[in-house]
Image 1: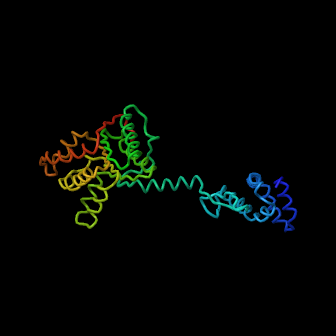
Image 2: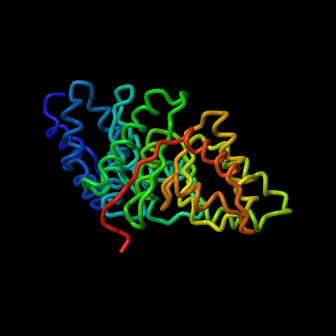
Image 3: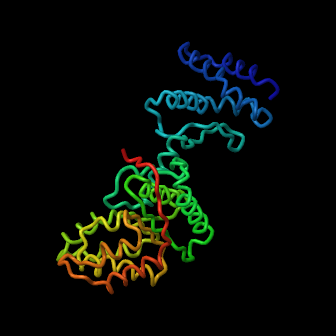
Length: 307
């Protein structure tokens, strides 16, 4: 087929159709995308193939225009693309960038399980993290962990214990890390420990108490947020937190912590004294040994960005 434009014009002249249909098809045959497609495949398209493909060309132009206007598309979220199939014109529908982004966001959300966590972490990203000198060590440690984990996801990788004052970005950084792992297909669970402790106390005697505990302790990557802000009890310390940490230590599962306490303070000021005011240093030390096995302490300082 030597001259595409002439061939398309000839097809219109050959058709003795009503004026309305002629006007419609005239727009189709003069459409830049249609002409470009025909030019690209002029050595493979015969006049007969162009004639038989009129309905497909019309469908393409019509659905493309609807998609451009976001108006009643045949397949919402998909755009039509002209293709050649056995020397005949056909249409394939491919997902739009918007649909792909939406599906990726849904897939990420399914991989990051958050329990009583703020909405902020849903869109947290390492790229958007505050690049301040005081936060460099923590950010670099997270980046190093992610790279090491992606290189060998079945190996044990020590997590982090991020300690620092309010609003320095501990939780956000953990959320960003979880989302980064999710983008590569790996699941994480983030729990706000004070809220989780209340939930566990309220569920005592119910059938799903240990199901919840089991799901948490077996998470591939677990982030325990705000440990030390809860009203600790011996049961929460020993039979909830202790059970989680014991399992994760034995199975060598990646575990992270955030806290306003450093490790020494968490042991002496939070874990040692139970709700009755009794000192239980050995039980506190037992918990801390597991935290130290699972994580490396990093102190974070800087501006409070929460306000």
